[in-house]
Amino acid sequence: MSEVIVDNNILDQRKTGRKALFLEFWSYFRENRGAVIGLAFFIFIVLVAILADIIAPHLPNHQYRDAMLQPPFFQEGGSTKFLLGTDAIGRDMLSRLIHGARFSLFVGCIVVSLSLVVGVILGLAAGFFRGKTDAIIMRVMDVVLAFPSLLLALVLVAILGPSLTNAMIAIAVIQLPHYVRLTRASVMSVLTKDYVTAARVIGVRKVRLMFVTILPNCLAPLIVQAALSFSTAILDAAALGFLGLGAQPPTPEWGTMLAEAREFILRAWWVVTFPGVAILLTVLAINLMGDGLRDAFDPKLKRS
Image (cartoon, rainbow, N blue to C red; front, top):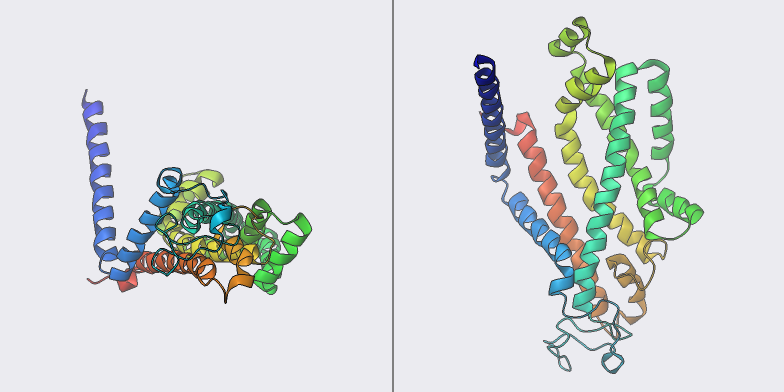
């Protein structure tokens, strides 16, 4: 009975500690108004992406042949049926923008997940084992960093073939070195701590030492890097889509929408402006949120 009470007390203390840490983090995060606005807009985009099938007024690829290049409702010749107008083949711009949010967030999630998981494993191995393992991994990462990121992505997609899946793989590869180097630096710093030395002395296995003792204390900079990489992934995917190497038509991806609208820049400003503004606002919101995360996690920026 006494053991159960002790276990319950330990669980309560852990819950209280986690709640206190979250409240402390939130108190620093909300001091950055730009970060809070960015978080609110990001949540809005996520909800739009989740509810796209419900809130979109039309199907994203349905063509209204009698309403090609129709302007937005607030411009002469516009209609409330198509609030943001239509494109060159009569597809509703608002519906395509709403569904495009799904693809952009999907790209960001997949790219960050791939590069984060692989980068953390390689960075842990490099920082923990050092020697030849460290040298081999870091030299490979140096080779990847030696190429301009977008150029390397173009080469990889050209080799793999133009598609959204291959574009995500290429973007994950070019982002991988940042996670490897950041994880390696954090691991090398944590290895000098007393609690790591104590864990070694009592005979903790290497795998447990790496993933249970060391890795949790390296997460703060990785979370910030993941937030900033999310916006970079969206931008790179849009760039590849614009060049015809990412998502392929008629996929309602923002970069692909820009590519399809290039020849109508002077005739129909809305088919170029709205996808560009969607990319701009989403990337800006994520970057602002990343700045807030950096301020909240960095102890040097915390007031005593």
